[in-house]
Image (cartoon, rainbow, N blue to C red; front, side, top):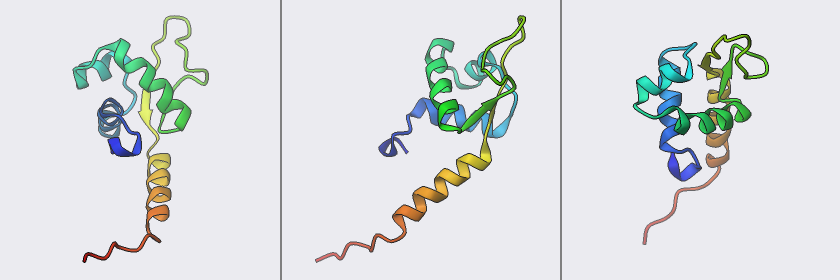
Length: 96
């Protein structure tokens, strides 16, 4: 997936969130052995892409409440299907 622009960090985050939803950044960090500062920017990019969602409309902790993240499996599936649809018309390469 890295060849498609999907970093190993984002794959790790998405894998964790696909198995268990409603996790805080700390819980994601514990599950992936990655630091919170490493995870934060990736969560932002994945939110923008629609691959994950939060329990907060503006993605900010309100009144001390922690933001919880979940995989947006419908959007993940849609993007995978779109990629596969793009690749499907490409004929196999003939070997000499």
